[in-house]
Length: 481
Image (cartoon, rainbow, N blue to C red):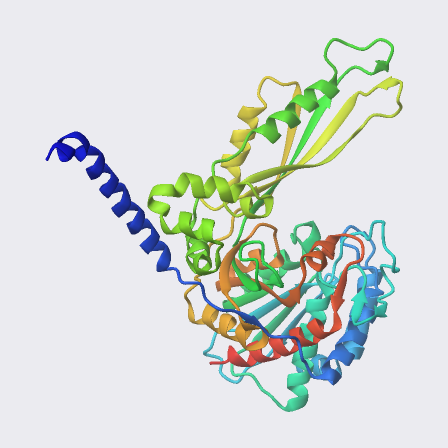
């Protein structure tokens, strides 16, 4: 009795803490870790060889998104017409502005809404640091090297080869199948995909589903430390902001009290320091719900007790730039330029800021925020509202399940997670004419191969290219029901 009188309160508190700890641990046990097994690529060798030859040739056309010349796109499209005789004779194939292509494969049942597959053949400049000529399409040791191999001529080739293969086999679709090959995806898709979307609207064409390029299957996902596929069901909006600071030019030996460099530096510093708060959207809630069984022990514990540990969980996730991008709107200063000589005070300096807008905000919200943030500085803002955040497609629809099932058939027993695409694709242009818009790249790539997509040594494994052909072939068939 004396013990209870002296220590009773501490015992009660201890029991409450123990019960509470057991409760939290039991919540973690509900998220049992699931086993995964990535299937090695083993496509038909004949499919691999033909697709590799096609991609090697397609890479040789310097279809730069920043080019004002049409000639390389025209030459490339002539090659496509020669390389795919069945596709180009049995499908309706239309050139778009001399650069893009739109193909329609007519189905037997006009009451069924069509499906649309997207890719693009414009590429970013090659840059430096290559050990292989970036526009030679060199095949070496099971890889095809060159600008656009992954982003996005490889997927474009896989789509075209899949249709040609189906035509050879005698397959006929029940619903219309469209293929869109954009030509300005890397610079905002305002012309190619934008004009095609307008054509669909004006002609009353509405799609059951759109499938564009997106995240690939990752050999080791940063979220799971094991293979995983991420099928994107939403895209962030895009705003490009130009910050310009002006000053009176003069000799560097007589600097002014406050230079335009100081004004611009202050603007950049404010942008870097200002962070939007992390938020969960419908997509990211589904993302974490499906991801939870594959998380590491700490993240799983925090997520299982999200009701209590939400701030801790979000702070931990946001430490990683890759993970941070799906939880908040972000801004990155991507270009700084100005000045003419080391001994001359510049009259104008500029910075370019790339802003990605998460669902729940719009571009006007973002613009207002930055105008307020930079008020008081002698800078001029020029805004280009590229796109609003996309709608969030259904991660529990028949079509998402069809994509997921086809992913597992080709890549093995791996998690297929609905995700948010931080970058932008042609697909977002079609959300006004589609029930569901998904983005996925049917390639299993290492972190190094993914990182090379816009850098030097961009390359695609030939076996993965063949697997992508077979994936598109099978998904086209699966979507006919």
